[in-house]
Length: 191
Image (cartoon, rainbow, N blue to C red; front, side, top):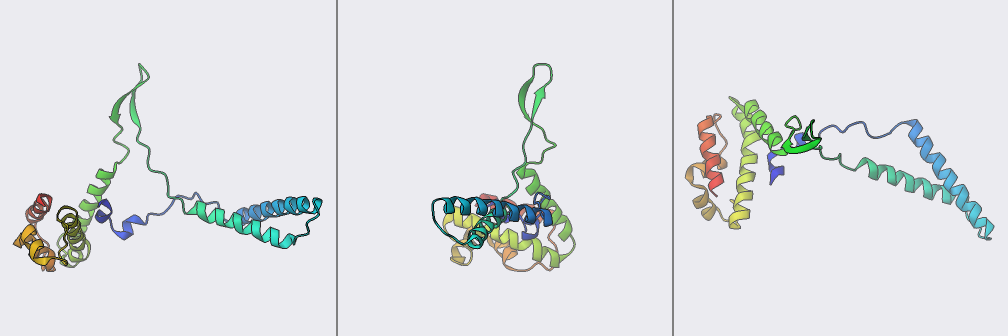
C-alpha cells in the first residue's frame, strides 16, 4: 500500500556510482575468462579430452558478464538506523537518531511536496494528487470490503459517501482547500 504514495518518477532515484564500468572492468573480465578457460582446457587435455578453447572462453566470458549484470541489478541496501549511545557507559539507550530519515517521514515529505507543487494549479492536482488518492481509496475498499469503485460502484459510493465519491470521480476545477482535503482523508481513514 505504501508504494501507492510514490510516483514512478520518485521511485527512480539515481543510483550511487557503485558499478565499476569502463574499459578496465571489461579487460579484467576478459582476462579472468581467459585464465579460467586456459585452466579448464589444460585440465581437460591432461585427461585426454579435446575441446575448443574459444568455446570455453566464450562460456566463461558469458558467465562473468551475466554475473556483472546481476550485481548491477541488486538494489541498494536500506539506510541503517543508528541508535544513540551513552558515551559514559558505552550503551545504547534505544532512541532513534532522527538525522536518519525513516520511511514515514519520507512519505509525509513526498505528500507535502506534491500538495505544495499542485497548490493553485488544478491541472497539476488532477494529474499528480487525485489519481493517487483514487488508487488509495480503491486499495482500501479492496482490502477492507473486497470491492473497488469500478467493480461495485453502488456499494463503493455508499461506503465512501457522496462528497468523497464526487471528489474522486470528477477532475477538480480548482484545487481544494486544505480543510476539504483533510475531510476527504478522514473519510478514507474511516473505511
